[in-house]
Length: 95
Image (cartoon, rainbow, N blue to C red; front, top):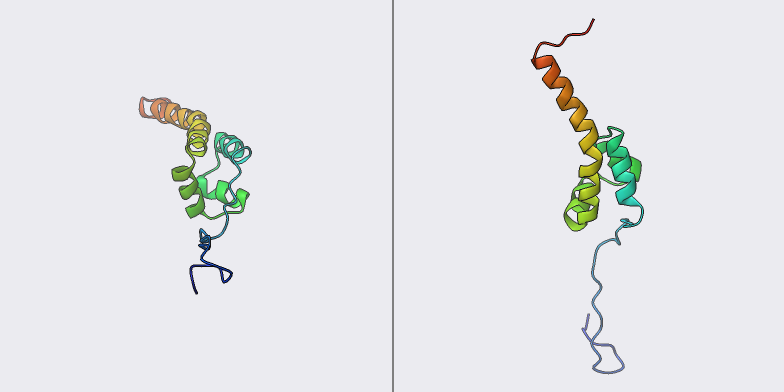
């Protein structure tokens, strides 16, 4: 296929290739943060968003606000688990 349009020597714009992204900057970070705060894993978040785990990994690399939202959402549940493990390790028990 020639790189110019038939009507002259005007260069043809190249297609960027690949499928257009499903990422929406105004929606996905907020959803990811809320679901992470609810204790969902990245696999579960990917399923809820209708994308693959690999897509979530790509979004974390390509969209810093998405990564920050996931980290912020995970902070609360991670702190609870950490506190529970510390209590258990230092002798707390519950009947």
